[in-house]
Image 1 (spheres, protein in one colour):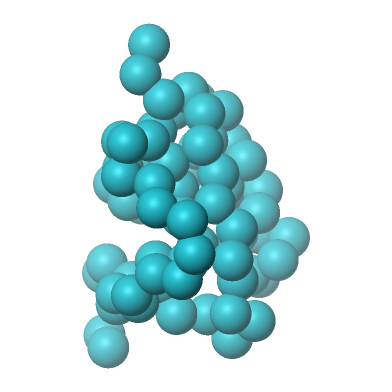
Image 2 (cartoon, rainbow, N blue to C red):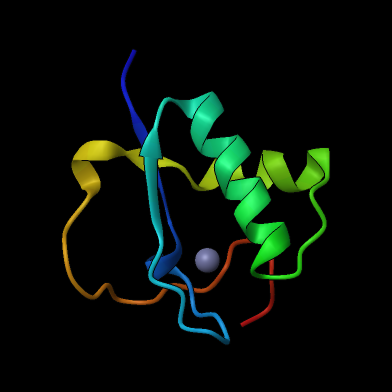
Length: 77
Ligand SMILES: [Zn+2]
């Protein structure tokens, strides 16, 4: 099964989070949801996990270093 990536560097955050999570989709969604709740103060809800699923990228998209920020989907910029 292909691995996927959830990349905090992709989105602006108050703590300028640099975390990148790579693994199988189920692992990444769980880890990213726990991370979003514990670090970013989001609620770990099914809706939030759905939103994370929509932001996953293939692991081949990983590049080291800084990343250009994109607005968070579904939120006003
Ligand atoms: Zn983060």
